[in-house]
Image 1: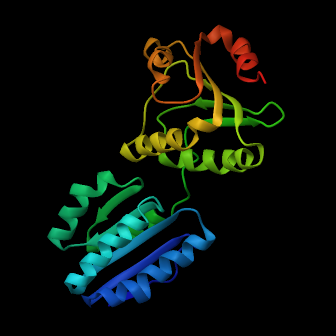
Image 2: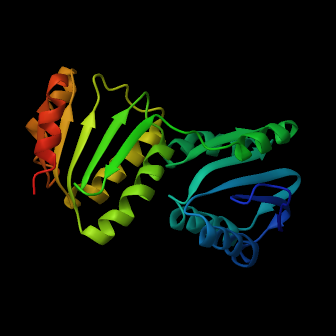
Image 3: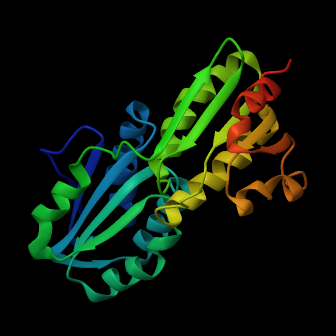
Length: 246
């Protein structure tokens, strides 16, 4: 069976597996609990405890588990799995990198550590951004290795504007040197943001001193609809005028 845990922050769903877990447990307990959280939050966190009282999954439960994972793949900001069951821990460690959110495995004795990690405030991230609404321009400035929550915050700010205006006139990225991504989840979030928004941005100016970054416009036209130009760090004002053109 699956039981819902209490005494966790609102955006954290905690569940505990006991005895034999069946397909019905997923359909009547886990799935409704996830969907109830997602009504209130765009992203949720999951604490999944598989302790000593756990016995096994039925075949149907394994299938339901796979379906939940596929349906809600991008809905989890963090997942903490607490278990001493070797095959479960090994599977999470082997495939957890493919999930967009952060995933960690904790031993049974480290349940409190898992609670603290899943409950801690979200990182403020390393992406500074400003939306100049009267110009229809978005200015981005990475301050360090980008994290997956950076793009969640960015989408929450930009999407309502695009929904009302139809598109952005332009986006200016200011990065003297690009520090990269904190982890694979951050990279996939970045790729997903570009995929979902590039057709709604008319111009992209890249203001940088990094030779590799400044080379992006040479091949970007093959992948994005926007016009893309590189500017030197001293050309910031020129870049802003260009992206703001009607």
